[in-house]
Length: 218
Image 1 (cartoon, rainbow, N blue to C red):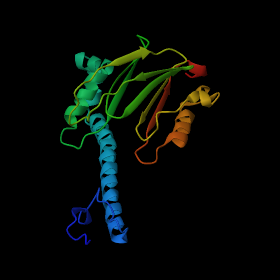
Image 2 (tube, one colour):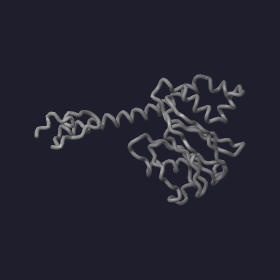
Image 3 (tube, helix red, strand yellow):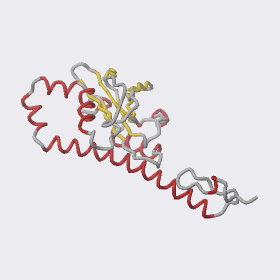
């Protein structure tokens, strides 16, 4: 039976299945649609990373940062001690854009804690010996919508190591599989995670910070 009136034979773009006869034209259409879809995802993520850098650069160069921190006052303490306030400020600034995933960690040395708030696919983990404490980032997009935002805290004491990364890095890493790595420089830890756990299909950013006094670090 001819398939000229079969709707499956006329579907176009992403999600269009190749014809049952396996013709090359149908496969090419499917591949082209898939490629356009994946490129749109890459552009979306890249714009979010760019937005973060632009907001930080504008804030630093505007003189506002120096004014806030040098003059002190309530706003300076809010920014320094409240990750939620920083996320909300970024959310308001990012509304004209496509949005981004965003995570903020504040190290409160006086209280001996690390405070974290995040929206989107941002992983934050405090590692201390064999213990791993995950700091939760809620679903949503900064600049568009998130339904919930909470601050999480964890003791920040030697030999603690804070590791944050984007979703371009797989989350199943285990530093105990690398004997002695936690005693090395943070840049080396970040490099190993990037080398061995980069997904290869998304942006990959890794941040590693050690508590001063950890393994002789000052």
